[in-house]
Picture (cartoon, rainbow, N blue to C red):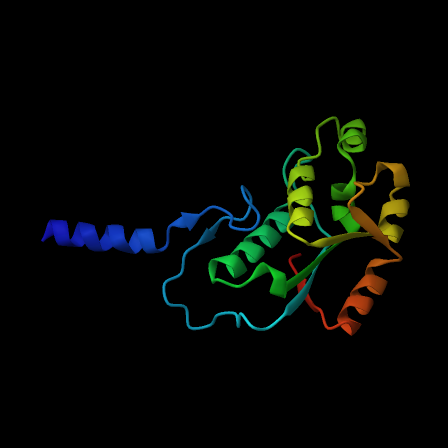
Length: 175
């Protein structure tokens, strides 16, 4: 009887075992879900803009909001959803603006390497578009030359959100 209980528990645990990132390797760990009742329709296109304006972590830790985006993308992949049907934009503003700084600029300001650089580059490599609000960026007195080149400037966060919503994107706010 003990063996049966052990096997049931082991099987249950394994069905919820964490998988490494499928799209965002090393960052987007997800749990396998057996027979979910709500899934993504693989023949549809999903347009999402992630609104990220907080980062209250230590300066030497990855912004958990960016990690949540990686988890979200890998949840899509885990369900067999084709990456080409997923249009993703990430908008940084407010406290998250510092995530857009190059490693050299970040290190100069905070005396540590930018822990977000690798994840931002991986998000970009997965076809995500990345923007930072110019109002937040220049409001914090950052210089254009100190911005990660793959991150674009938007006029403002509100303008970017409005523009993307007019293009059919749904806002997901992880703050």
